[in-house]
Amino acid sequence: MSKPDSNQTTVDKGEIERHSKLTGDWWSRNGVIQALHSLNEIRVPYIANSLVLESDKVKSQQPLANKLILDIGCGGGLLSESLAKLGAIVTGVDASSTLIDLAKEHSNVDPEVAKNKPTYYCASIEEHAHKFANYYDAVVASEIIDHVANVELFLKQCVETLKPGGKIFITTPNKTRLSQFLVIFVAENVLNIIPKGIHTYDKFKSPKEVSALLQKNNCQVNSVHGLFYNPITDNWFWSYFQTLWYALEATKLC
Image (cartoon, rainbow, N blue to C red; front, side, top):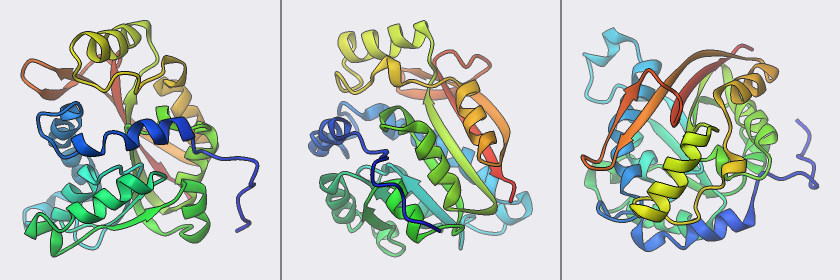
């Protein structure tokens, strides 16, 4: 595999700076990213249920044992740690050295995680894909595609890291005027439950756009589900409507 074109990058330096400033709030359950904490309650089972046979789930408290999973845009390790608790061999990658340092430090806090620590790298997806092509059973790109500089390159490189038959999981806001109003204006500027300025409407992608890019890279889209967040109860739940947020799962064909 050839090295990535140095003129192309998925890294948006402004996004890295904005997210790095959240280090002090990352593991605060009542902080400005509390919605990411509660998102684990729905995205972790979503990933596990897709990767593990039903017969295997009932046999083990660690149903993801021996599954190689890449958590791209892992930040401080919220999702990486939850997947590691289920036995997965997790690699967390983020372009923020500040957040990677935080993730490494926090992996020692929970004894359950410390027994099966994720491996963390400060790198871009293109740098990581060059070293780990056709390697992972699954790639999780949760709340990241609207923060990269080049979505097409990002998804292409994510797929490169997957084994044939491997799966990619994506959660992200949809690109609708309702999501612009509720996710950006209301959630960021009125309710202050999402960090102000963290989202840019022009970078939102619709399920149709993401599906087309994945299909272009030899993936079959298996499902797209709507997601909704209730800030009053701090809970996420599945929704028939994909207007605000959605979760997408696809398989690399070969």
